[in-house]
Length: 279
Image (cartoon, rainbow, N blue to C red; front, side, top):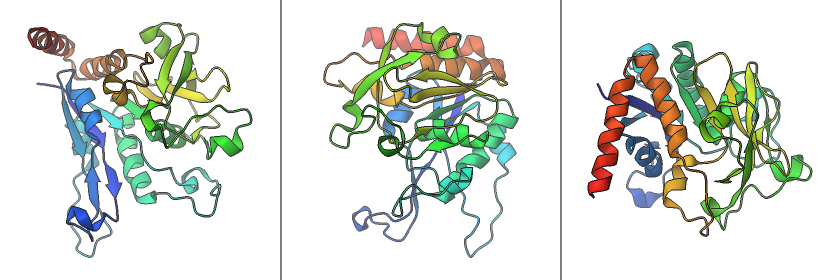
């Protein structure tokens, strides 16, 4: 059976009228994420959010069934995590959060971790991993991290890049080696105090802002601050950026080992490469 990777949904609570559903909550998956995962010969499936606070009570799909039928979890990026989840107060009065999404994703995360299935957190997902294990966040790098370089630029969006270094003995150094790499940077928050069992995997070398974390008690529970799903299709002003393929393959191999399907994953990737070669 082909590996099935679940992806947490982004939530849009107040869609603009032009979309045709002005009073409905929407759930969506950024297409680059699906393309990145499925380009490795596996299925990418968005996990729906089920609202239990509606006026009509409905039977909730058991979380265990969701976890049992998926081989791994990828947490998308998105809106800031509510400081209430890690016992802090908002850094400014008008800061926006989505506690509904926080609760939904923390439930998913808990289920996959308890089942010891691989988890990969992207940007916000990296931060959520830290919060889940009891860590904190720096809510605004420019105002709360002295000496920080630019980590977010609305004009350049996903074309802003900077260097990252992988920590000695880290899983990322096993995947990529120790040579400095360049990644995109689209965040104004980052990991603060590390959660229990987490170790630093990567950081920005100039200002030492955390860029990757991993839990040591599980085969693959990792978060990265950059967006590897954007790397294959963005020129970044012709700067070389980190190849996102080895990270996804490490995640998928962990999923295949958990599911006992390593050979099938390898054979599937060989077929993908052959199709690409033949055009």
